[in-house]
Amino acid sequence: MRQNKKREVIIVMLCLLVVGSYLLYSIVDKKLVNNFRAFKYNAISFNDVVISNFSSFSNDKIVYLAEVIDEGLLTSIKSPFSSNYCDTKESLVEEDDNDRYVTLKCDDYLIEHYDIKDSNNVIIYKVGKWDTNKNLKDIEEKILYNCIDNNSKAKIFDEYLEKDYFIYKINKEFSTNYSSLDEIKNNCNVVSKKFYRTKVEVDDKS
Image 1: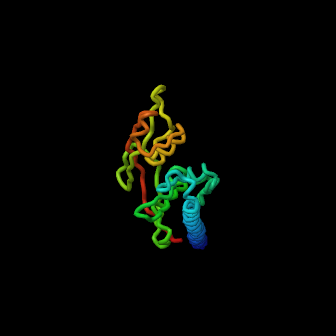
Image 2: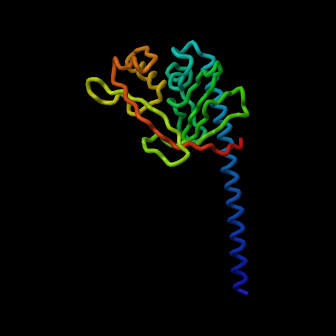
């Protein structure tokens, strides 16, 4: 009799554990869905600010979030996934074949090359950090740039940057108006490295 009661208690506890796990999963899943919705809304809002203020930027073909903030058009974009702010050097609005596309990176999540006219065709990725070590699968690779000071031989920036953002940062650093990598050699020695990161599409239920 005592063994039967113990078995019943164990069964009840297992049932409660399963139910509790399901409820916890539902809560977490619903929160992530809401985060993805806010993520898409932030991307659209960022795009709208850029499109409404083309005249504020020297290069309206590609505009980074950092430039928008520097122009005082936004203070920042809050990440829906944490207390952090969205990445200013990877988030951008660009022109491609006369259409505008927005890329927004917040924490480990990325909306890339999103045409907001097609609201049903947005893909969200989860990405790792850029690294010079190549992983075995699910990788993205990109050439990133930095510059060596001609006098001190030290790197101008703490990290390697995407080409167009690198040119923007160089222009800001030296008060120049360069549009290509070749022009930058007047101020410093351009160096580049190939970087890799993991990149996988996430299940977006929003």
